[in-house]
Image (cartoon, rainbow, N blue to C red; front, side):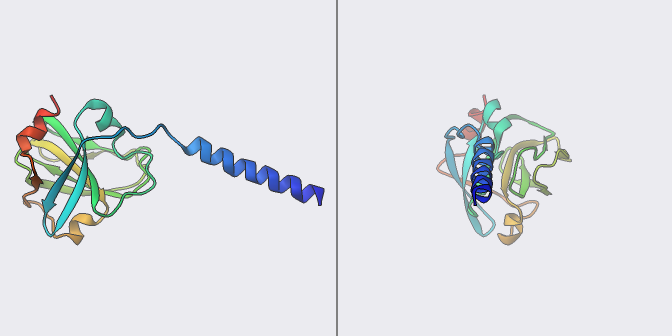
Length: 159
């Protein structure tokens, strides 16, 4: 009896310790926006500075279906993203300065493999749950619309 009680206490402590080790610093609140694309609408967190772009969606255990993250860069360039410490399977769309979808890729959780853009005209990257783009009729060439702002005002946030 004593042996099983000790085992239960040790197992409970291990679960508690594992949970504590997995916790990370709280994600700082980011500005939010709303996008319309294809047949869907997304509420997005806007990552427009180096710290928020670096953290991205890492360490999150889930992402609500109609949520995403929009990464904003100051100037057009080739882009590459990876999924280190990102637990949720995602799809990424690379967008040009006008919010037009240039490319879409699926990404693997916790992968260190770079997912590079083919285009050197990427100004925005949009991450959503894997398959969201297909479920909402979004493909290369789709125009993304931002509610209550324009693409240039979003780019200014990255300066």
